[in-house]
Length: 241
Image (tube, rainbow, N blue to C red; front, top):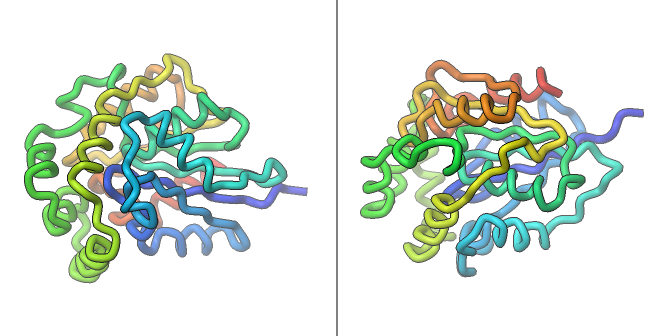
């Protein structure tokens, strides 16, 4: 009998569970009866009043306290950007937690140069004036439902604001993270966006080359691929599983 699929969704820098938007519903349509659990990085979402850790390892340890991972299920981790770094350290520390991982638009400091890991102009915008409109303009290329998404993101920021201190801590954690030379995952699949204006898509190519794993590229999407084309992303996940 096939194991029940349980998806764990992990967002990136200063993003939280609600930023997945309608992507979860698309997963449920593709995988009827699946379970979905959101992993929150301390300093964001329901933990926005908590301090963000300064290291990716600490993010793993604190986030894992929230979870009860059942080995009888097929546990699948879907992580984007900073979440991909957390996922990678997680697999190093707890290799039996997840059966499969999808890493979206992520980067590693020891694989790619800093100017590819984050566009310098984008970095200055993020630390000087991280408004939701600016972030949305930066990470999303598909303008469908743009006003509705902007309204949702403004409400998220109003109810669960991420402090500047926590933003800087997450940036430091991302900047200092080093990935292993060999993939720590049981199974891993890389996905990137050709028109990502925040993280150079070559970063995913660097990882795929070093780890010898598969990579799929969306030709038009921006950094927030789940928002730009969630159906395409779900199709990639379905094909890999």
